[in-house]
Image 1: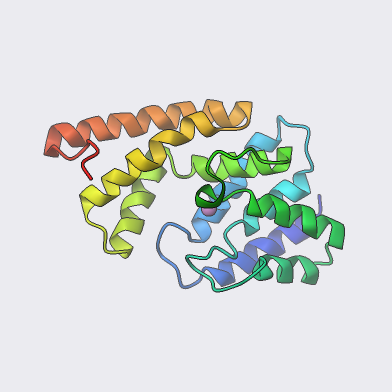
Image 2: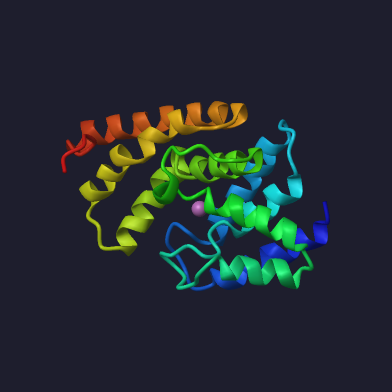
Length: 195
Ligand code: NI
């Protein structure tokens, strides 16, 4: 894998997300990249596709950018000299990652399974809690609306993991989410789904 391209991709997303402070910032992308490489190490896969798809997976997120056909991701891949064939494979992975667009529809490649698991892991555990309230605050949601998000999405993710390592990592994070909601319910009566 060409480490130089990976570093360039990191710098590119850093530039794209310079303005954002909600759940989808550069640190999220870098964590997804780290999770993805961890999962990839025990899978038979193309690690360069995994790495670049992970780093670019939110580069055209419709909540942040008004782009079409993954044009931010494609612009980077072309500038980095990635072949047309590989560009298509990476873009296919990216389009299969999004939770809202895919729900539990099965990914078509091992690389897409890995990046999807990696992205979903970042919505679980302590970081999942932190991101949910950060995003909620930024979008004018009150706390119980954010708590609802745990029930409508975050608690479902454990059973949607596609890889063995993803499932393993998700297990611990899921237990933490349940603990958190239980504690919140005890302290405030707000842990249950009320909307
Ligand atoms: Ni993401």
